[in-house]
Length: 198
View 1: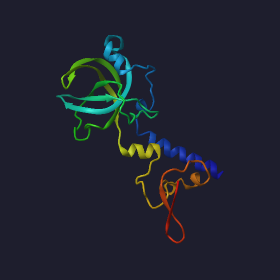
View 2: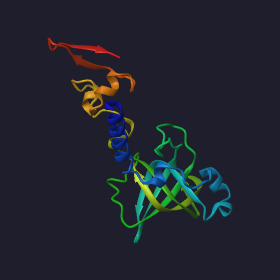
View 3: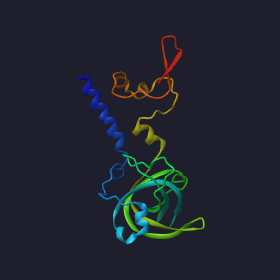
């Protein structure tokens, strides 16, 4: 009974965290696998299609009624978060209604959007001409370190003076093998001298 209670509690906690990310971002509900490069090459074939794309913000421009964001496309993980990689799937523009503060939606932040392929925009990167697919966003999510800690179970501090399970209240699960122990962290014994293990 105790195991069942702890399992249900854990599912509730994880479910509560996941609800902060829109469903369209967490799951690919488009039913399609349209790549950024494919849309750039033949925009007429994909115009009006729903896509879920994400990547790293390269530039932000606030216009009169909306905000345009240039994104360096990256592969998305199972939560819809752009991968931390140097590999790009091409660039795209996303149009979001209203004003977005460029001090928050700034370069190098990770962004995932769900929306409709509208058209293409011919621009340039430095002196190189480039054709961007333009997405009208229906929903979007700006990723932060908070998301990574709470959705993936990372700690607030890498060397917190108690081992990770106690920090998050999951000590029972860790001690009984439900979660893998990993990371380099101190554990205090009765003499209050730290000893380290993996």
